[in-house]
Image (cartoon, rainbow, N blue to C red; front, top):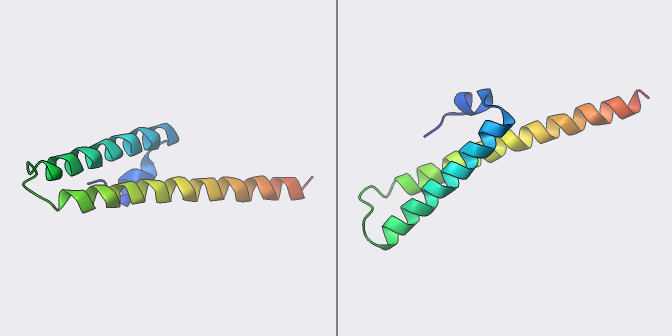
Length: 76
């Protein structure tokens, strides 16, 4: 499980890669659960939380970029 501090230190490209990996991990955990091979079912919510954290940081960066772009337009 990745913590917020680690996620915030990642570049945009690293965030995209981490999101892709987390989604694959979640899919794998769900598949293992459906085939009764998953021993620890708590991994599914952990993967979901990791995905949510990554998406939150991506959204924060998009909002910050929009604010800075908006303020740049006002100064012209």
